[in-house]
Amino acid sequence: MSAWRDHLDEGQVIPASPLALDDDGRWSERYQRALVRYYLDSGAGGIAVGVHTTQFAIREHGLLEPVLKLVAETVDSELADSSRKFVRVAGICGPTSQAVEESGLARSLGYHAGLLSTSAVRTLGEGEILEHCRRVAEVIPVFGFYLQPAVGGRVFSYHFWREFCVIEHVVGFKIAGFIRYHSIEVFRAVVD
Image (cartoon, rainbow, N blue to C red; front, side, top):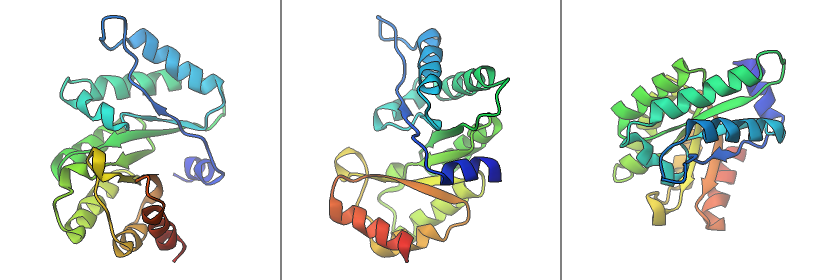
């Protein structure tokens, strides 16, 4: 884990890859590969796949595994003769059993970490959500995902983020709450 973690700790741009569609609105493997090559050529330090709230629906269409697999294969192929480090992050969501299963899939495909959405468990208490996060982090290192309530997230307390920070294998955060005071709570928890 240390090589990719060191790479991550150096500070990287890790774009969230959109789902590449053809003119008929169907997933295009050709365009998806081209998009991965674009991010590689642009100098990105990694790629995050299936992490947009608009992409959570790929699971309903049986596309999670094919998309994760295609991106991983493309990265492997493009970097086969290179010593370049490139972090792969997979979107992880759903109730605990689904999130753990998705984490195992991502790990088996060579992903380094999961961006963990808690929108499916947002009605649980903070302690229960922390346990959900711990269970997933046992399978794959995780990024916390602070998602605004308008698109399925919820407001978490400073205490939640402080406890989240001490979960083994937490590697970072994506803060998309769009309220500076909520973001400050995460920053305080990380610093503390």
